[in-house]
Length: 94
Image 1 (cartoon, rainbow, N blue to C red):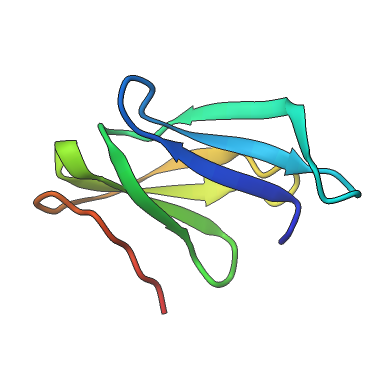
Image 2: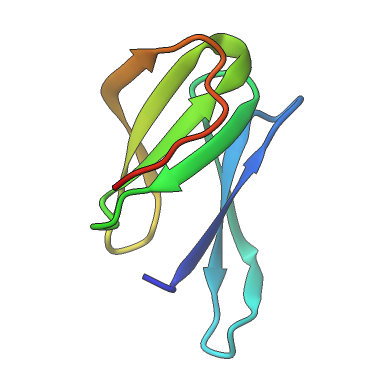
């Protein structure tokens, strides 16, 4: 929706970071929040075309985790949906 930027942090953190995008197009550093990705080495993630879900492929724990995206503040809310997949590294939605 152009309001938030998400980034994966592999290694020690294993999180998805959320930054708010200001009206000038710059990231608002103090707005950063981290969300546990539900596994290790979030190799890739994607957002569904309707903007409702963020899906994370955790390479080292062989799982794909689904999050709801809060439409009001962009926060990630872990769902009960997970998939077991050997070393997922890329996600594509259509």
